[in-house]
Length: 421
Image 1 (cartoon, rainbow, N blue to C red):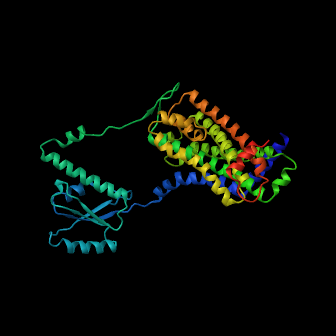
Image 2 (image 1 turned 90 degrees about the vertical axis):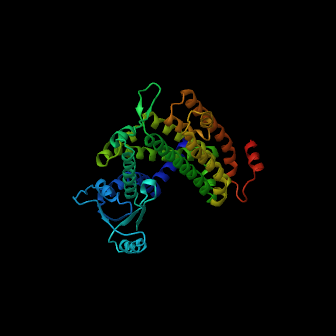
Image 3 (image 1 turned 135 degrees about the vertical axis):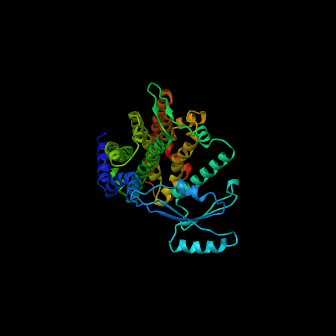
């Protein structure tokens, strides 16, 4: 135990005081900040400008109504939409379009609309502009034009437009999650799905990165022959256990730093920008399960990565051998998009208990629905048993593999390593 503790301290110090750890720990919160604050700051910094739009209205009925509906002002008091009516015939349309295109290129106008004579029969309105990717402008023009046409059709039918609008007014849709033994909580798509996906992505990324760190560390010591020196003071199992526990402690340290940052963001961030507080309304149990499944998922995959590092002779070999392990992490991410529709379905329930998938899938189910404690702790117990079994198998591979050099071992050779006493 003393040797394992010495190796843990060595691995922890070597990793935590590296520039890559410090930079990575800082970059994580910076990325989170950029996603939250940068768009808000850009919106605040953006100076709205008025739009100058020419209108060719062959219907003869749309221009005045469009100008009346789009009559909003900018914060500085200027008119946001400035429409200019262009009179022409169908015969002269091509020449007018050519002139208007030149005005767009020279930035005299932002664009021009062509409204057909049969607009009430659902003919297309054409909008020409230098920038047709302005979603807000396109949405506003499309919405107002459609509302005008619909109201005109209602009026011509002899119905009261205000009455029809009140009858066809859309209702809001509020989702409320029911939790066993707890009060109901209002949860929307963003908080439920995107919040879960954010947790799962962090879980997936950190298990992958820290598992691969164990593999690279083993491979580096093996290829540099340092492992032979280390074996003089500790046996192969102690080296493997110390390495896995040491790198795992580094991951928990990073999680702790990010958690403290996240709590600060929750308490102070919402006062700086308009962020919905419900996005952060996760139960403390979610964070507890998050840590549990990170630790268990990390131990399982770090053990597999340790075996890969011991069996490999180069980075290229290690990358090739690690692909099946990477797929075991990618598959639950792909399944998750299907599982969201029915997290309590038979397929989702069964797959969330499979040890290689449960760190991601069972955690997702806990966040999306309320699986029974038997399912949750059953998956944790099965995961623990799998970890114990993996450690027993990998320890036998590790003790021989770390001293083997030359060609990559074949499957029969690996099986002989496992059987060897």
